[in-house]
Length: 312
Image (cartoon, rainbow, N blue to C red; front, side, top):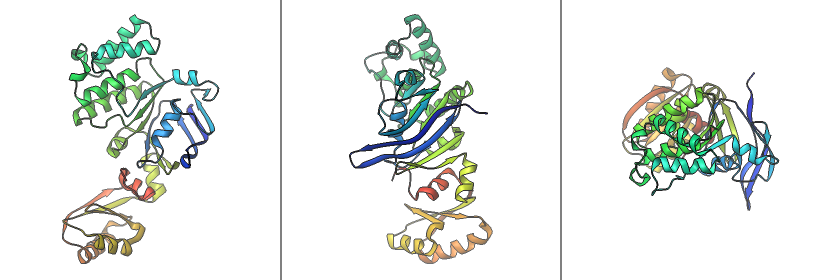
């Protein structure tokens, strides 16, 4: 039976009249790689800030690694490594000096912090740049150092809020590989991102948050079952007006999502629905440029549940 390293019950947080978090119940297993997805303003960062002891909740219970967040915040914090959206690095210090600085804040003995910094620099393939100033690093390299800083004290839980924003593809994949290794070692990872391909690739379970509530959770296959989205037909248009989009929405209702010059149609019977869909789209819109049929992706599931793109 899996050990629940994080238990959340009845969590609430408001800012004035805005309810950022509404009555969230959630449990995360020890060693789980948990993806938290939601549109902008859905409550992801507020939830992470509460779990990482940065914010106090208005109501509810949170237990982290067996400790009550209200009674033992300091002990909860010892179990957590935090990778914030904003880089927490000093440009005028070297990569290693940055890690040693954070090691001092964690109270790690100097010799131990030195060894751990060397180990993490090698893990993130930055050992040859340890004496270079952070200001000379690329965005991807800085992100890797930021994650290394969060892992200095061997935390059992790693909380990551948009850790690959502005990162080049090579650095992103390097980060994925390192996180996968941390996960194998038993580190529990909570990961928020705008990149759905990241979550599909690296997360074992997913929670979708919208308007401050967890509206669905499970593996990707479990989420497909919840929404009934088995396959989707994606049609790209050369050009599409608002009037044309409105006609398609009236025609198909909840069976489709439309944004930019793309339409996603949810189906359980491609051979039956595809000819009809092409006929209706050809009659209502300008020329079709591309058609694809895929197993329901996380993006499809997300749109089905929220009706919104991640960045809306």
